[in-house]
Length: 381
Image 1: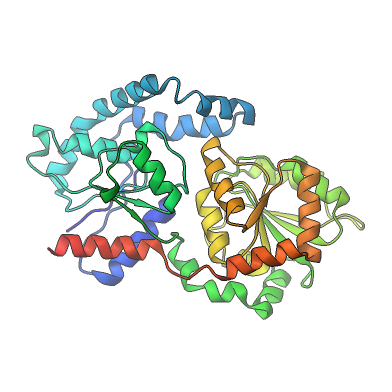
Image 2 (image 1 turned 180 degrees about the vertical axis):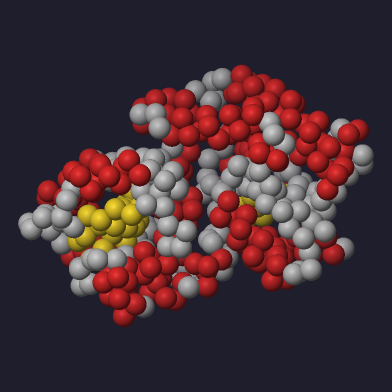
């Protein structure tokens, strides 16, 4: 009766894995686990949720400075993390003793650290489930990634190398396909259908024939947007833009107030958080905005070229570098560069054709299916 611990990483990764596990072992019991809430530890939530949101809201230069200082003050960062984990470890150990999970698959290093320490305590009563950590970025390295897991799943060869650089044994790391939400996986072919594209645009109140760009800011709707959107609003001619503002209703209202539809201006339409993005992905030809891992992987899997304006957080720079190095998108850190790139996409060019060619070679495999196979095989021994 295995349980799956989601931790503080990508919840969509957790849901995708559970979907594939249920397909293989429907009789098993699964649990999406949030340590901060279920262990009622305010320090965990403060460190991994609230503090992270506060960092994301900071100006870019400040965020970049915080991450740049990590190698210099790695010992302080690591010590502070160990203190937070140590306070929650006894509760985590009691959780292990009570629920007796057969395996834990964290999508955040903090969750992995927590249970790696908890299973060693007497309070765990000898319950020592294997921990299989999913590294949820396309690259990047810092000491906290070496989180005591028994096996690591990496999304790219670069991510594997970066994990090795933190001291993890290469034999413990496996590279898997990109992970996307199960409902999108099942509808990938629909997002390529030109007839459905026109229909989706009509239903969203867009010009059915105009080139369409999805500007995504992630679930929290935090990131650089207004300068880029405003520049295209005033200077763009050939495309229309859908903006996903997530839970940031204030940004949605600001876009509607500042960039209203007018003759002679580009159409920019904002939408709040949407649990099902199928229609949005059907409508769009390309994706823009921040370079969060989920957004990048979804765009690549659906063969949408990416225009990255600014990483939402410094750790997303590695995602941006991956996209540009693979020839699947472009980095446009200045508003006018963004406008020019969207125009080029809408009108077509040799480098746009090359990017589309690269994207068309991306397979339909889902890394969540591989992790599910690993879990089932390992627990069936």
